[in-house]
Length: 284
Image (cartoon, rainbow, N blue to C red):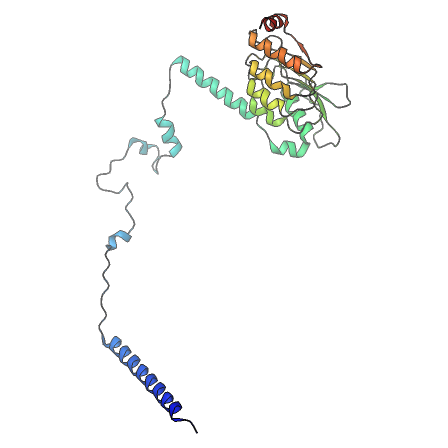
């Protein structure tokens, strides 16, 4: 038999359950009988409507550009219209030169597909020969250039174990961005950029970091090169011959050549008389 305390606890639990059930039914009935209260929206319904196009707003005055662009002017066109132009003869000539420069820069751009199909050496050979230069491959004595009929006599597909050893890009006026076409030329030893009007110190900086095996370099006639560009060439560890004819005649330029020659005993610098620079150095 259950004790008196156990029976009292069960009785209390029953009364509690009955109370909760009664309260819940009363609350639900009151909620059903109560009238719904309309929710107030602080934001006007007009806020959720789509705006009118600015061309339909009262007081809108169409511009004259709308005669040519009924659906709205292009952003690039508006940018061009807001730009100031120089219509003087000098300004027109500057514009023509800029257009020529942009076109030439585009023609000298790096084309990944060409390097992927031909490989780095043949791709560079095509790039140079097509522009009137010439190339020579490793273990070969013949310089390859475009003939009178426009034939380049170069393979049009990848050929293994073909490496460029010499590139003659004289008078081609290659720009800085064109050096992207000179990649992974591990056996390039001979290189000429003579008479390049775009070649400068930045050009030599990139060049000296790419061709560690280079032994011969001709930058004659590249008048934009300063003594800073000559000093950068110390990174070419295997350089044996450097041509700098028809360039700067400043003392700083000659001193940079002399310093480069002293740092590389095997290097021979041609095209520049360094005797007066040696005299100035001895005086100091």
